[in-house]
Length: 449
Image (cartoon, rainbow, N blue to C red; front, top):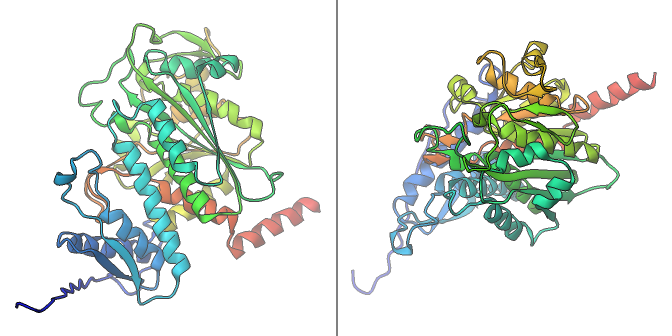
């Protein structure tokens, strides 16, 4: 009534499911952490619909997962709407009833970094050109301790990255190689190299996709967006690890200068490549970048891309596909995915797929396979031909690129996955668990003997 000030307090009560929830080997994730993300995400969206200014979030004995669920659930793609039409208000998040501020901050950083990737992926391709992508990343990271270098078309020509250039020459938008360097420890320690495919739009080139097939192709730079977001978290968290990021940027368009099917180009490795349909030419752009990554003598190389619809058909939103011959690297990434809830699943990289890409008389190698089956494995085996050591892993995110609204803490739209898995992976490399340290010491003892 008149003369009184009312303070409305809304309380949302959520259930966390089974009290005995934890690591589920069959589901390949920590169900307790995932239940917290889901519960907090649903509760925050309910309160957001009531236009609250602040949300106090209980830690649920895991403030990191609670913060992730809250930050991811509240974000909405309304950056291009007029200010009067932005109906989703983003309230402030405050931890309640817990004193582990460090984990809360880590969870906030992981969630905000994934939202940054979502923002990049959601921006329409006429706005998010290769140049704009590079400028946005530089503007975001310039205030941190990261070193960012942008390589242009002339540099790519000087380094004989002809496969890269053939992938992007049908577009009037110039290609770039965006390079990010993060030194968190002794520079003499070999870095981990992250490579993200950055086709800001993939029309299929001369082998043009259908209109339906191009609907979400603004997100074909998801790999580059995830890498950029991971570096954002790296700098803000200050992890003691050396990491280098490589993001080949360009457009795959059907212009008059576009590469043609059955063209042959020579990559920077010296191998000649027989070009198949342009619809699969994202691996050409990655091939030269993987070759370039070898010069840094990395401990591991992880490439991220949206490449094969077969992975999407097989896993849908459940998981990203992973290809590697390095068992230790696979276990590290698998452990990171278990904790993040953003699952990955290992697929074969057998020699039979190597024959598929090498059995040609007119060129050393081709992304044109003999049979149109097993395309994810054949495409990954094609990229494997440009590695020098078995320290490489390839993640195909085609199925997890676009969220259909099935995940309670993610709205429908570009997902930004698997950003949190990559941050967790680097975090575990920087601060290895005790059992991993013992395993490394045991293996080094055997090598000494």
